[in-house]
Amino acid sequence: MLRALCSGASGLNAQQLKIDATANNLANINTTGFKKMRVNFSQLVNQLLENSGIPTEPGSREITAGSGVRAADTAVDFEPGNLVETGRMLDLAVQGEGFFKVIRGNEEYYTRNGIFNLNESGNLVSPGGCGLEGVHLEPGTNKVTITADGTVKAEGPGGVTEAGRIELYKFTNMAGLRLEGEGLFTFDDTTGEVVAGIPASPGYGTVKQGFLETANLELTEEMTSLIEAQRLYGFNALTVRTVDEMWGMANNLRK
Image 1 (cartoon, rainbow, N blue to C red):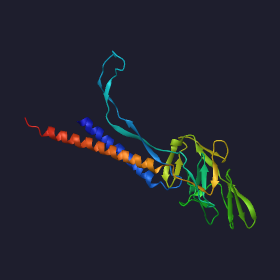
Image 2 (cartoon, rainbow, N blue to C red):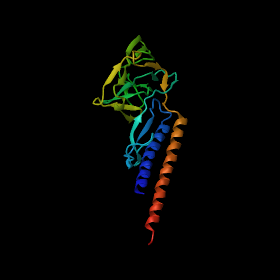
Image 3 (tube, rainbow, N blue to C red):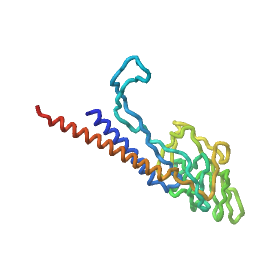
Image 4 (cartoon, one colour):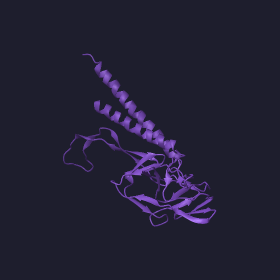
């Protein structure tokens, strides 16, 4: 009974993590550039119940009993989302691989969220106050054109001038990216390397002006996953309740 109780409890913990991750995905379904999260599970140690020795017939095998399940890790799915046209001059999206690099204070972040605004200093900044690297516009700029290879051209009183170039960034170890919220990721260079590249060059995507990337998840898939996790949570809760009732019956036995 103790084994069944522990297995049920481990199942409750695992499915609670899955429900939390799925709920977070659903809450961010309209967040630009959001990357869905998935909880991966692994089986706990098995115990050998019967050792039949040398098999005497095809298909014979050892019989084991598991000890439950645990959440191995929570992984981010970096599959690109769909692009939607907004027509807004300072909305940017990456079609293909690569991240924008933005800076806030002394911290560097990487993101697929391309919503930017022009501040009074002539920098493109995200709603969270992070500045897009490599771009600076002069006062009086009234039109910005950004090509597929990241070249930024500004039109102002003095005519059309080049205002910088946007680079994209890739990583040798995507698992080294850590989600910091607001669609921002940080990268610890002890777990891999950051590789900068020019948009539209081999291995890198292109920059699309006037577009944004949607979250890379499907509502129906996430709802199905949530229902599945809730059902499994209920089954594990039933296991724990049944074991508790059996234990109560055993404790109430009288000679």
